[in-house]
Length: 364
Ligand SMILES: Nc1ncnc2c1ncn2[C@@H]1O[C@H](COP(=O)(O)OP(=O)(O)O)[C@@H](O)[C@H]1O
Ligand SMILES: [Mg+2]
Image (cartoon, rainbow, N blue to C red; front, side):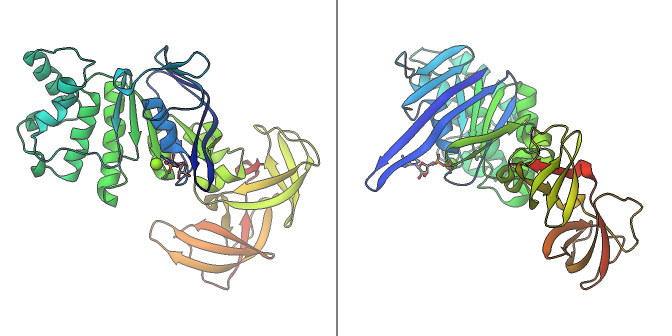
């Protein structure tokens, strides 16, 4: 549905060239919710703006719904208003001097590829879009009398009113306070699912990416590092950088000594059994073993397991109700650990730690 091939975009500044997007290729199936996730300045907005036609790339191709909207080689550059897209930005720009109806109607009245559209069609379109975001009764409400969440929905309705094939969202939730952001996160996913629209979502927030997406791509320094489902990206990342960006990761450098479904890596803690069923590594490869905080099973009792058992000392423990955010020292290395709140762990206590090999992911 959206296909991006070898997209490149640089900016030339006085102090040199910024390579904002470097050879990015992404393929998103119809109806999918895709998130481009990356730190600030990694090239997310530039990629989105190239898809929208607001930036002119210098190389690559972009297809939306089978139609080529940009090709460097074939010299195709379709202007933004002729691309089948709807957009919501961080500052979602609801016009305060208009009511909800006219905010949503705006793209129909002024952006419709120069076509005239009848009053009744405008009404029909606006009402449909408002229904999609569950704002049906609000058409005549002045924009100034909307809550943050309602403004967000109106912005979404405005993006949907021309029935685009692709919805582009650039950090639309980041101006909302924490609680509303969580509510709108659920709402956004619900609307996208209900409308069935392919969505390209941009954020620096890993929780948002995990919660919303069918598929996530991590971008760093303009390069797409890895793409996968939220589960793959969190549980089975292929790159240490991705593991670290998507949540907390304990990492151990090591060398592969045994390969097979269950492999072994020599680390500063000694040999660690790892799951290699999804990894492509060879004996002697230098790798990182990634262990999530929730994979460290800590107990005052010696574990009944034999593999990957260590003795450690609790360095810090922060009781947070549903879990304890802890630090455990094993040999000279500090591990972040998510501990059960049902067993009290005090700093200085000796503990036994078991890490199931399934939860030891090998990355580059
Ligand atoms: N119009 C521009 N002129 C010059 N540099 C830009 C422009 N837009 C973006 N950049 C630079 O390109 C890089 C990527 O920016 P951007 O795509 O906005 O990142 P993100 O959205 O991931 O925060 C940054 O280094 C940014 O400073
Ligand atoms: Mg941005």
